[in-house]
Image (cartoon, rainbow, N blue to C red; front, side, top):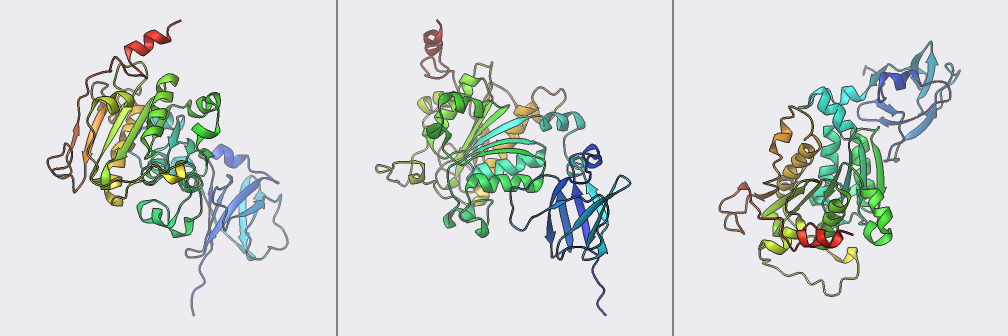
Length: 376
């Protein structure tokens, strides 16, 4: 006779204090994972609503259990559960449990938990950056991308086929909340530079870090300028044609270092082997990223992620990761498997810092001439 599988329940709360605040009438949200016969319950409204249920916590065990619905009640300060008239053991999970195996010490983790990051562009690179920052302990996100996931995106993105039709913002928010349901996420499924006035854009981008992950140079340059004016650190990365290589540039406030506008005007970029006609483009939806192997894109993106975390930890004494931050070397070139002979790469998987001379005096963003014009 087949043994009946024991139903289990995991209850996620930010901390034990939050567990004590669960009383009669409190609302929780849960999903039943049929493959493992497990209920996953959290006090946070999930971004991915499909298959989730909402329940109220009862003051005492009800006489009957609704079909296919978990019942929770309080009993002398403890949370109890039942499903289909069976009592279900509850295991409480806190954020400390989620981040119990991490390369960061307690001081670094506490600092990361207080940081707020804006990610502009949630395609192949941006979606990966979002989830990895959540994995590292970032808990406050602003996500911006007007695009919708299409079939051609799926094999080069963190999304799957069942995510087609979602906005990239919605998917990235779901991805983060699956990692940490308590993360605070604000999503803008729009081109904020077109739909918002300057004051609103400034409020959106005034964070501890901006990550520019779009594949459009005009948008990257705009983000670069906002970051400079707002005195917010910024990481800007991207892949070259076919993801044969890529680059990461970062800027820090209060450091005299070349910005993206300096770079684009002063350093020769790799030649394009193919041409994409944008002469009839009218909006963001008409621009297309150039395809590359997803693994190659991830190789470049992983460098961008580590620099993002290093910047956030740069003021924490003893942080090993932050030791890679050197304002004199803020531009790194990353070659992938097919990089040999392309642009400045001599061999596959070549990674090196490219020293930049600057800032450029005539740079419209950070140059000395511009600063003189800004003075009253």
